[in-house]
Figure (spheres, rainbow, N blue to C red):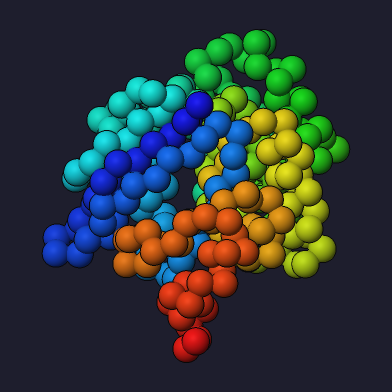
Length: 239
């Protein structure tokens, strides 16, 4: 089953085309990594998938349904969950309360219905010991884990991760990758934008490369990274 399909999706800001005829499919249960130089259109692509930015052209299909004109909330309720590159939790709320907000608004269920689920997610993301701690007092790794936990609290069928490993130490990165791998092993479909390539390659089965809003490579991570064009554009080296 294909959980997400993009067909000739484009987005421009004035004369600048940031997404140019992008097409790809994501099968259910797969982890897809997305890489590309700064300004390649990666974050815009996520915004198009979530509905935060409307597409100028093309079609976005989620689980067989055309969602191109649906709102972000409608897509969230259908099962699209997302983390953001810069975590911005409700700092004065506890970690558990942050999850309750995400779960109630992201699923439409009551607090009583989602409380047990939120506790399970705190266990899975190794935040259970900090459940009653103000979110604003967390370390960077803690905030990254909370960002992942809040996305998971919406009960996503498709989880979008935006540079969630950025800024972490090597040990912190490995710990977070282990958590993401465990979530993926449970069958959650993941699309992950990341500059930390060894973290990405530890999880994803397929890699997509963007440059100037266009897909320039897609396939097995090792094969894609060995491509002359990808190495020249992404790594900035002449091959």
